[in-house]
Length: 290
Image (cartoon, rainbow, N blue to C red; front, side, top):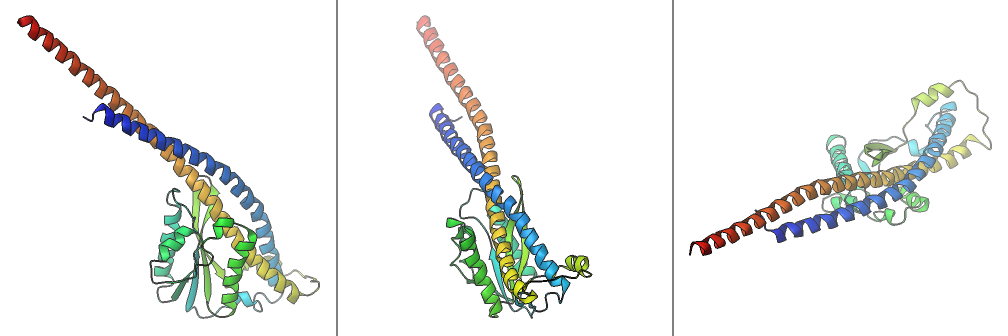
């Protein structure tokens, strides 16, 4: 059985760790509230903008004349995994890496793959491998703003138009609640056609001002940038939710470990006291026998 000093040191170590995990949980809770507010405010705007775009496209010639909807033979694929910069958030980052590897193995096994990592963890995971890497946006979370997210989106959009990539895929965690984040593998480009929107608006006559071409030209890039920014916000909120949950579990585990260590400490202390009493009694008996 461990001596009292060793057990005491372990107890102090676990108490310190528990204080850290409690503090990290509180920090994540505060950040989660702000991130959750951002994504809940963004979702209705993004959904409405997408709905308007679908209505305009379905009302006339569909997506045939939209450059970002051009479908061609897929040879070069740009995959954008969105992770966090820091760890201690459970399987949050691991799930994204696994999803990317699975998508490459199943869907893009014979394609030329380029990775555009967003988040330090994604950059570190893929820089060791043989994929082409676009690293200039890996630190986007250092200052998460729409302008920075727009720059990353514009890079992918311009590269798609130039023919550098035939398909662009986003891989991110979608925020459901504090304890649940769902990995989403979403085709960013080419834009996918929404058949349900076409069915709803096929018989509707739209009057467009100044012109349909102008609206499509302005609306489509804006919609794509909003969609990209929404994915980044989803990941940001999911990160704080995952970290809050992980730190909560770590705090609980530390509490359970403290109970065991304190019980061990008391038993060790009791055993030491018993041994001392036995030694005193044995010494007294020996002296009395003389």
